[in-house]
Image 1 (spheres, rainbow, N blue to C red):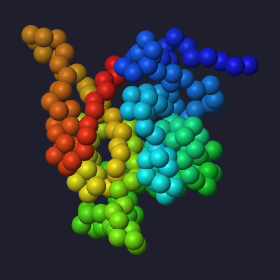
Image 2: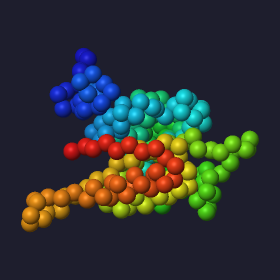
Image 3: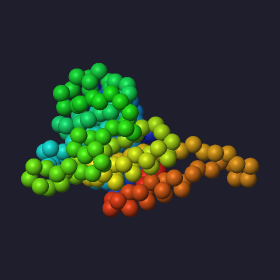
Image 4: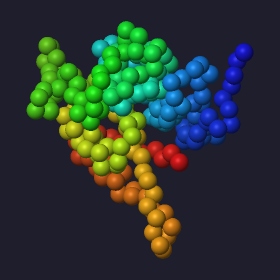
Length: 205
C-alpha cells in the first residue's frame, strides 16, 4: 500500500511550499543518507540528466558504500553511467547493475578517466572540453580532507557539478560550550570560487 512521507522525512527548502522538501522513498534503500542528496537536488533545482550535459554525462560517487546516493542517481533519476568509488562493495543490487561501475579504492585518490595525469582536462575528439560530468560525495572525513578533494576536482575541472558533504565535530571550550570550525566550510567554498565555480552551502543538523 502507498506510504507517504513521515514527519521527519521533510526538511526545509526555501523554494518549496512551507520550505519542505519531499525526501522520503518508500522502496528499500541501502542507507538513509540518500535524503541529504535528494534535498540538495531539490534546493539546487538541477539534475544529472541530458539537460545538464548530454547523454554521455557520468556521475562519480566518491565514498559510495553502501550505495544510498548511487541508488538515488540510478533508480530515481535514471542515470545510465555511474562510477561508484569506495574501499567496500555496494549493496548487491547495485553491484549487479550494468549502469554502475564499481571502483574499489580510495575516494581521495581516484582520478576519472577523462583527466590527464597532470590533473588537467582531456578534450573530446571534436575539440570541446569534457566538463559536463558530476561528482557527488558523502565520504566520512575531516573537513580539511574534503577541502583537498575539492581542490583536486575543482582545480582539474573534472566535473561541472558537484555535491559534497562536509562533516564537523564540535570542540568543547570552557567559555562557550561547543564550537564548530565553520572556517573550514568557508575555506572549502573559497576553493570552489577561486576555480570559477558557483557555490552554495546547506546546513544539516
